[in-house]
View 1: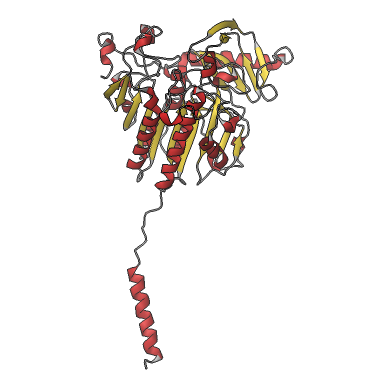
View 2: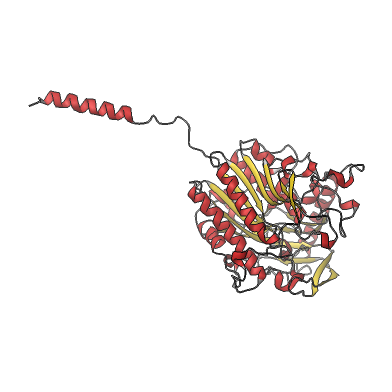
Amino acid sequence: MPSFNHLLSLCSLLLTISSCAEPTPSSEAPPTQPNLIFIMADDLGYGDLSCYGSTRIHTPNLDRMAAEGLKMTNFYAFPSCSPSRAALMTGCYPPRVGIPDVIGPPGPSWTADKQYGLNPEETTLPEVLKTAGYTTGMVGKWHLGHWKETLPTRHGFDSFFGLPYSNDMLPEAGYPDLPVYDNEKTVAYNPDQALLTGWYTEKSVEFIRENKDTPFFLYLAHSLPHIPLFVGDAYVDLSKQGLYADVVEEIDGSVGTILAELKTLGLDENTLVIFTSDNGPWLTYGNQAGSAGPFREGKGTTYEGGMRVPMIARWPAEIEGGNISHRVASLTDVLPTFAALSEAELPDRKLDGQDVSELFTDFRHPARAPNNAPFCYYRSGNLDAVRVGKWKLHVPHSFRFVTKVGDDGERGDYGYESTGLELYDLQGDAAEKYNVADKFPEKTAEMKALIERLQAEMDAEKRPPFRPAEEEGDGAQVQ
């Protein structure tokens, strides 16, 4: 029978063997940089998601994002496609970077003076993130220039699949053939648009899988629900509420597919996913238009319905579920915020956006409350209005409103009016029904002077866009 000392020696030997068999812990710290996914719908209204009050459209995946993350009630885009995308990419108000209006290829609405794009000298969001080691990819609608010098792959994206501009810029409307790009190569023309949302989802999942082992930034810019509307076979008449609702529900399904893939790959906890829209709804299309919810007017205006959009953020590692923020923020804030979260280098040029990363990392931070920094409502390079806290002042400008509603894809009609000097208390009158400029003359005068100063500064500081050389003409477009 072995002695007690022999037993002790045997136990010691077994422990040594067990210890040697264990893998040596890695000296590398676990990754702290979050993966970043930014999803943008086109012409989706504030009232088009069930988590924002829609009783017509069922959006369970976006509702889940809101329940597990953060929902914002005062988030702003700009009145139309290209300006909003310029703000997102540069952290600047659209006129500062030379993109005050929608741009496009030669066609009935885009004459030579509108043939321009985002200047390659601007430092974009993906270029900022690459200084912190991120792989960057874009899927969907670009709309910041269709020349080779202005494509996403020339502005910091490692890969691109999608359309160079809006899905209604088609040959039957007087435009060139609508190309589909894979990086800088045209792989199709005039695609079956019922396939677009599915294609974009597949390409997004492919990018996530290929880059699961490195910090990545994915920008998914859906072409829909911009007119004309198309929907994949699986979603045809699924909503029982018309084509527009079907289209939005397919986009919601796309979000669900991406969230599920993140979970499968073990990336869910440390991935910040943001969903928003580029402007308010295109109201003149009637039953194929979205809803601005409680707000006045829609796309193309600087009333709240044209620029206030849904914004949902989900990041399980940091954001506590069910949060709501009433802080004023906009697309201009995305670049400085993502730079802070990734510890990337900011551009050395002037930005208009602010770092609001506390919204995602500290529920008790004052940044969640309404702030008093001015927010500027630019349209076509003009400062139509400014918001400071709860107060919003419009200076006189022309705006459009629906005089005849369209139906089943047919466009209705707009009329035009000019505003006066209009002051609104958005805290009590978000619908901008009651002009209180006469009741608060000092506030009106103070904000009018602010608008004049800000407009003068912008006029002096704005930077030029890219314009193609005259001899190149349309030949500079990638084919």
